[in-house]
Image 1 (cartoon, rainbow, N blue to C red):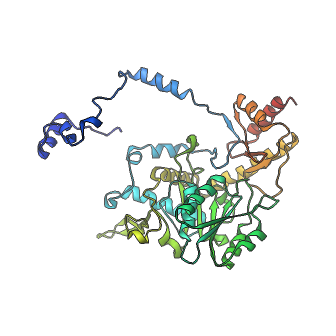
Image 2 (cartoon, rainbow, N blue to C red; image 1 turned 90 degrees about the vertical axis):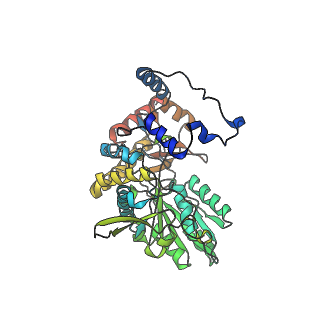
Image 3 (cartoon, rainbow, N blue to C red; image 1 turned 180 degrees about the vertical axis):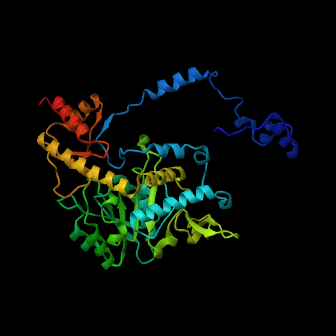
Length: 439
């Protein structure tokens, strides 16, 4: 807040005089005294040194792992320094949703660039200004596909549990149906089961690419089945994997959604993150939240405007398709800076490193008796069994400063590798596992 200038006592007095009150307390005279606090119970003030020591002590209570081999929806990726440099500028940190678009051209342009890059990444025509997170994006996409005749969604059971539960909550709220598409023995969505479930009451099919076990789904085949039955197809994408896998547009998806955390956002104890949403031109009027468009002003200069807002505050309530009220503006800006800094080649390189490191990790773990539970191809996550109790293994790794994979309730461990965990880091993990297991 380097340029923030508080009001002086004289300015406060002038404002009070204009509105005709004698003191700030008079502004709250209508509030009953019984619900007012006479004073806040604040501790005594501290010096800068004392405050810094206090905050450092509080921060030291947090456990930060030098090595992370866990994903399951939030991933440890490299973040270029320019991301923090840009988003920590006060004009961005303090900005909120641009209600007065004509005086928010900088923010609107940043959102427009974000939309452009997400549309490019997904291979679809238009993206919105983001929603709260990947799970809410998936639920909003399912909501986009409902109509009077088709009011039931088919959701792949291979999708992350938190995504499924969020969609289920939305479906409960709007009184629409939901059924899970079973997982096949190979860990992938069962194609035959989907074919059997499809009928003229199905509004959409949701499949996540990559699925929760890290496997690469046959999205094109699943999409074709959905379209043959007259249903829409929604693809949940991992934005890093999307750099090297066929895009949502290429496989024919109607809507692409995803969690934007891998695009320049730290793990941050679970958020805030941002939900990515993109679709084709024929469905863009159903996108929730906001879309920023490009136009020209009266003098012919490039300008940006808010357009196609589908929530109830901007259109007739009965026609609203969503009550999403805001966007993750600062997180979306971070994603924009990340994508611009990485460029096409940088993003592809990061994805290739994730793939290569994960496969090297699987090979090294196999040497220790950790057998993959699925034979299907994977990107940067995979599930293994464990030759020792997972809880004991993971606790032993934590003692050595390593956050291991995620122990799954149904058995097995979900491991993850990214560009941050190369050969040296994986070899260190293998050494630690040998120590924990006594090999």
